[in-house]
Length: 301
Ligand SMILES: [Zn+2]
Image (cartoon, rainbow, N blue to C red; front, top):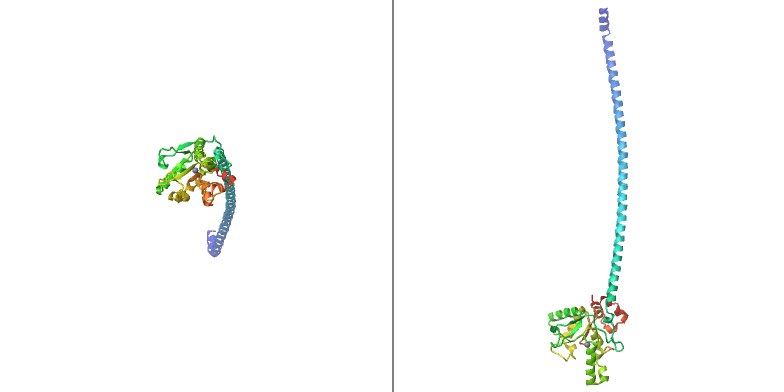
């Protein structure tokens, strides 16, 4: 029997080898097929995973876009609100400014910018709200105590400091005159010249402006009391070029239709109005009272 098997084995050795070979080939083929299936499965899983990740990334991107867009929208709203707030603040400021201007206007003595003429005189009881002495270094005749409106004096002081810095010989010879002072001055003139002639005097006509305390008459240390030729002095030229910067204006220029020419007589009208007059080459009495009144609120600015 063993021999038979041995023989058969030997005899069929070739077939056996072929059979084993076929078996090995089958096993390899099967293994390859399995491997292929597995690779395919893994690939599909990777693909599915990638697709899921892509979808998630896309969703996330969309969400981020939405957030950014919402954020922009919010920023716009905030910006709009900020602009609105600014506009509101401006309005509040404007209202406050108007209130301050109105308050200032209500507290500013309307007489200070009134035109005084032969038909419009100040009340005899009128007095400036504050009266200050003008230092003797600015006045002519040291024994005379000259006064003026306390709130206008700082402007005169500044003007004198600048005039003196320019070596200008300038002095105040007359300033605030109360009704009483003016009355006695007038009666003196009446005694000397007679009532009719005295009434023609510019000193009389202009007294109302002096009663305001805002008006000064100038002279120089050379002219002294006799300032009739004041317009020929360097001081007059300087005032013509500079007085407006300090709020002063010449009340009665040459050939005006109100009073005689008074080159020495300067009235404080406020810096804004004086600048306007200088710019437009006009005089206080040329302007309509309604135009003048617009400057009352900025009189002491
Ligand atoms: Zn005068």
